[in-house]
Image 1 (tube, rainbow, N blue to C red):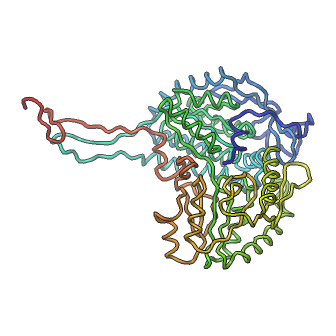
Image 2: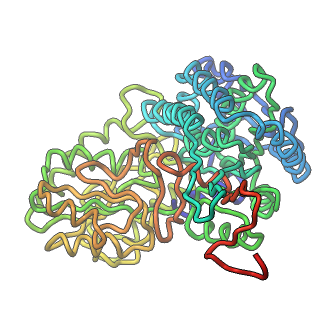
Image 3: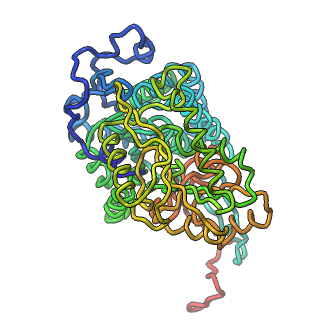
Length: 536
């Protein structure tokens, strides 16, 4: 993710004066009755540890499609965070003693509670974050799917017995909960990232403190209220799913807290590195989901119809605000002109469908903040200055909210600093390549290593792409976009993307500690490796 993500997530910035300063809140508009259905009000408390109480500053949540205030949230101060940490730690003891299938049953109920509020929560994500409603609902569905995954995991958490070389001994491996974990999430997936971490951590026996982005606090409060309702119904301490809305001070307090055994951080590479170093100083664990300057390689034999369908969403969907958004199209010289021409046509077909993300006809919503709007503007200007050609787009749309045209740029070299920099906006650089080997080289030359895809019909090239000399990313796709990952696989990337893995596969290991256990039932001491020490 870009530095913009962090600036709005981890640092507490003042609300830009360019935003609509009207005192009327959208929550008072009958059009947005779903906000009340989620338990939200004009003024909301942003701290939960079994009780809702906050003493920090007031944050206003804005709709990026309108630039208007949705509602207000009172954030946490240092004492509020401390109370959350103490309450969560105290709640952990009873939670960890529950059998994993019993914890899985709680998570199953959370999934069902999310299903009951699916439409309303999706509408809130769309209003507060800015992604179109189908994507917003899909994000909530992703949390639900992780709950389903976690439920199965709760009955299959493994323990291994190894053969012992010593007679009358058992050698086994035991997994136990870590304890308290911290989750710092970003604006662009205000539900799913929390769900990836929380659902898996809960069945593993952990408790959590969630510090969401301070530009999507209402979504975090609504999600926490849903989780709280399930915990209360089952007489489970609410502090196992604590919430702490706040800014830089709360983020730093969490990262430096020795009680927090794992910090899961989603944000920029630069800040993720700082988080990793800070956590490592105290020998804690970190799970980092950072930048992604993702590429699609278009082979000479690619199915171009398939590619164009994929590239439109991969490059322009979510207004370019996914960490898996395609930033670079590495196109074989034999099909370069054709791909660029057809992509421009595809883009022209969606410009009229840029608008209010809650409307059914909308395909692309706004950028999230005025800061993102400015970054888009500067990047386009710099691309032109460096000799790039704007094949399509490149303009801010003059209307209420923070809307831009999806943009296609050609003419910049593959190693241009601009191409290597991730701008969190719908800008894609089209770069000509002579062959697959060059495409792989260009794919791998950026500092990040999150997602990648190859479009080809050649089976040999597929295995070259997924092999040791192929893509160096954590996600290596073939004939699908770089974005839109399923929950069953581990999500995350290599290099400056941070190396963290969330969701499926064996990502659950992040949330547990492993012990190697040797049990002697022989009645005699027998040393390993046949070591003799003194008399038998």
